Every structure is written in C-alpha cells, then in structure tokens.
Length: 169
Image (cartoon, rainbow, N blue to C red; front, side):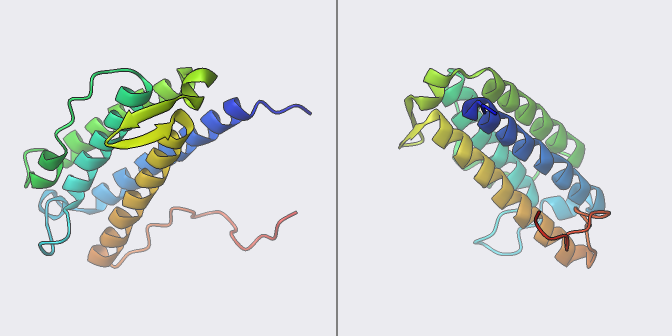
C-alpha cells in the first residue's frame, strides 16, 4: 500500500490542532470570566493571555509564513492584556484562527512544505512550521488544562470513555 506521506502529515497535523480547541473550550466552561484573566504571579500568564498568544503564534507561523499573508503580529500585546475579551470572544477568536490555519495546511502544496521560511527570526521548512505550531498548541493546552484542574479540583476526562489500558496490537 502506497502512502502519500505529505497528505498523511497534513491530515494528522490538522487533527492535532483541532483536538485541542474543544479541550480549551471545556476548560473555559469550568472557569469564571475573572479566572480566565488571573495571573498567579509575575512570571505566569493568564489563560486569556495564552489564548491570545496561541492565536498570534498560529497566525504568524501558519497563516502568514506558510500561507503568505502579511505578518502584523504584536506579540507583546498578547501577554500585556489583562482583559478586554470574554471567554466566548476568546474561544471564537481561537476557533476561527484554528480553522484558517487548518485550511492553510490543507491547501499547502509539497514545494511550500519543503521550502525554508523565515518566521519570528527562525528558518523553518513548512513541515517544521506545522510541527512547531502543533507542539506549541498542545503545550499551552496542557497548561490551561492543568490550571483548570488545579482551580476546580476536577478531572476534565479528556479521554473519558476510552480504555487507555489496552495493549498495542
């Protein structure tokens, strides 16, 4: 059986992006508007900041660098915000950004995925860009989930209903 590795990589990357958004939405459903914007100390960001940061990162890396749009990101503003968006507005912004990023990945052709792009001071192939964004999104999703579990003392059951003790094969 012949596998088109580029198509497989793009499809799996899109699944990876799209599985994180409902997890953040679930977390935000557990939190108050105020909890979303709490910064526990000077070295940590609020969950609202993290969502703004995720949108900025996906936009700069995938939509702009891979997709060819102009890069107008103001990264420092993602971390400076102390409010200004409701949970629903943040989730809408994130959902739209992920949808555009997924479409950009879906329509990226092999030469663009193998080409080296300059983004945020780094030189990455299109495949490297997608890999970075997927890992970055999962990383911050985990932070949001951890903080939500800590605040609410509740299992979020992201894998509820699945037997994760099954052996391979």
